[in-house]
Length: 264
Image (tube, rainbow, N blue to C red; front, side, top):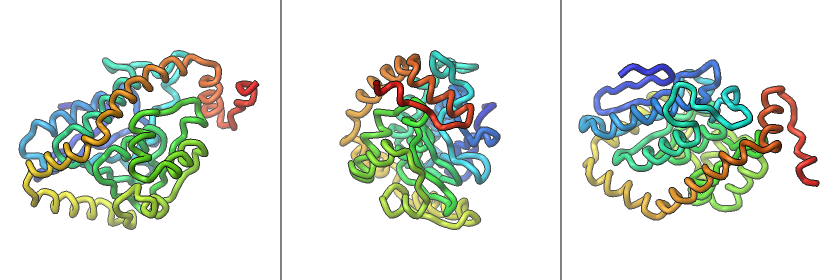
């Protein structure tokens, strides 16, 4: 398989899906997500694969969400993809949860916005000490009211999840570890080695037991799929509002957004 915006590797039972847009801090387009979905489907059906690693190229960013430069007054366009960004993002979140194999997020820098949601839904997260976590939606006229909120709250608690979304602050890897958002934090030079060690430990386990366990863990929050679908429809409409336009325009102009007129 040939990809333009990701790198897909398989070796010794480990599949790696690597977002390859470092110039844009590994922000994704519809095509990025479509390619990720294709790779994850391949990892699903390949019986030699026992664990999947999701990461980004370089040491600056894991993923920083949707590429704001691809957003216009109607929302995010399809570009060269078959699906628009919102549908494609939902499909990737669903397959990360559904694939009957553990998925490990290897967070090597910024995990922000939709990129943060990607690591939230992964089974495990191992982060570099230089990693940064957070949401940005309310700052740029966007939101994720599915797994990005409900599942996040299940992991770290309602109060902290609301703080993350309402204030749009960024959190260090150590803070993420303390709130239960990640499983382990290591020095940057040790990140790949640590993830590989976790993968090899997982590969020593009975594969069908892991599949059943993952399905069991997911059962408690599978209802969020419906909430997420409703939220994507609402977000598609919201992207056409002046409030949303102010958020993205401020981001592109590198200035603070002025949402004051929308409170009148």
